[in-house]
Length: 111
Image 1 (cartoon, rainbow, N blue to C red):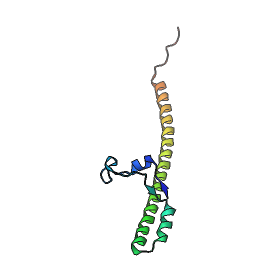
Image 2: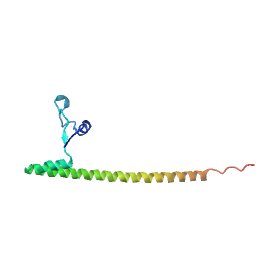
Image 3: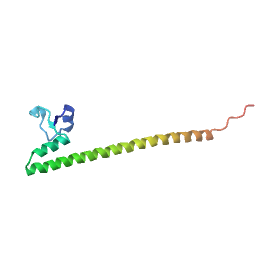
Image 4: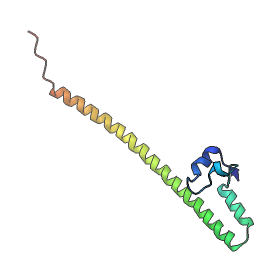
């Protein structure tokens, strides 16, 4: 378990569902669990409801890991695409230069 920073709390805070800090809202930063901390906390609770909630928490962490992995794969694909576009841009630039050389009229011979 760890305490959130001001920036993390501001990013997570819902504009309508949480109390207003001016009108007696949260006076301290909230705490959050890591994946392993959530599993450890769930093993200490024995009620059926606690077991059900712990299953949902573990599923949420698994889904989060899947989303992060897919974003990483997407970032790698974008890097490869950008590299190939750079190669294609250079090839197209070379072709345009060659075409301009062919289009230019020859220099008149010196008399």
